[in-house]
Length: 189
Image 1 (cartoon, one colour):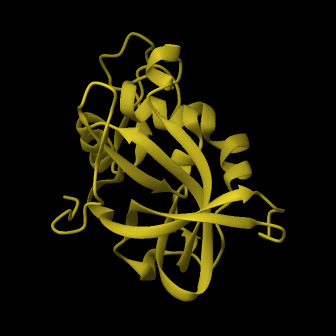
Image 2: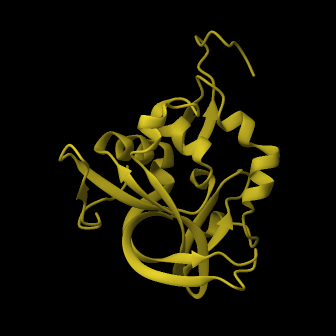
């Protein structure tokens, strides 16, 4: 279960006055196709649903991102010497947050952090990034640092090697791993 006690960033309101949340994504959820599959069950959503959300490049200081051993996804842990490039997402509903909490599973806890939005994105090493406004967001922090590889996680590698499996229609997630339910009409992988 995700620890949200006293760690929830101040929420906003959407056009209908419903509560919305903000998050910082640093792994598989940086791919909007994965985000929409997790939150809406398909990567192909109507434009009016997509417009509820914004995704802005951002930096999280004081953390490092590492690949989880034996998995296609990363975790972040506190580390004052590092920073993590990711995506600041807005317009998240309570239902979205429940799905995200379930997706992240018991390996993570949600914590409020401050991220810097990027006004210019530099190269893969972060050289040339130009930081702008600071914003609060929820981030999923990995609970077990000993289960992280001493290697940075790579979004482009994930896109090439794993993305299709993570965004198939009917895919479900168990502890952050994709699966197709046995009763799904698409059959087996």
